[in-house]
Image (cartoon, rainbow, N blue to C red; front, top):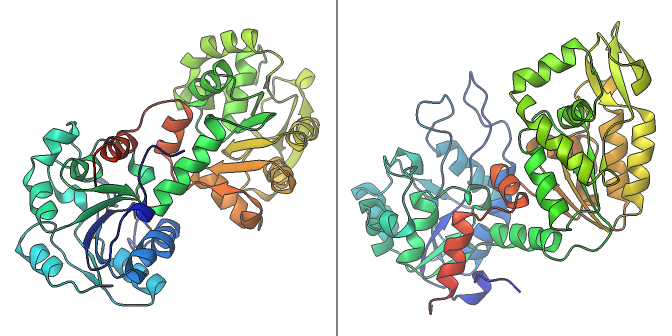
Length: 409
């Protein structure tokens, strides 16, 4: 059972509802146009659409980028995309809690939507404060005074104790939006009571969280197997005593994750039969794919994928699993010669009868490219929040929801 309240627990008709979403999207560095509107569509088609249909007066809060970065821009584009998703007018106000924002909120009629200015234009938004301290800020006090309910739908920002994520829960009745609700229910299904066997597949180009996730899911008897690929797989191979060759070791050094090797060695000793590292790899030699067993390593060529023997071993484990979590591609799938590992593993996950949870932007992109989106049980749009949840960490945005649920609405 969830420890938080949801939209189903409140009457929003004719109420002013502040909704914290995560519209943060990748931008083209030159044109500053949004390249992927997945998150905007996800929030728009679920939580925001439901609020509109139930006659709420909807006030949207989100961030985009960080101050000083190229993608720190206003949310006008985001509002325009949301307007298309909802099929109705969405007003954008280039103000967060000043007179213009206050007037726009007061003028809202049931079923209308306004998007306010980027939350990170508020100087204290990202400061490390507890919910009580954030609630005392002018930003929270002004907006809360104009609203009846706060809906936190930004699971992907829930790992940050930012003002707009945790501040309102101290001063307004607070519930989870549908994206937040679905994320937490799916993750609870994986971490609290996974059907067995349960397998975690860790790949991708970043390996910095791989050890901590592996330790958590193995030490707590969540995962029966951890399968590794991508840079994570190479790091685990290195820790198991495999000499990868100079270019591959240099890439791992560049990532700054060599310090994890000793911890991975200990993990491999404790869970030798449960942690699987690649038994063959694919390198690029003269522009072509060439597979090498471990006996032919080290190699002077860059490793770009897992090999066929590894794919077969992993697919067998996946076919027998009832819970599957996959984060990160198994190789450089963007190169057509090296999509094989990612393609065959994702196809095995898609054809599995077990519950599958997919996370990470590159994994989602690969699934979309392969046309497998509808065959996955749950796809998480979260990034850092998902990783921290999988590492067993508490998320401030989730804690504030749970604390709010203890109070009478």
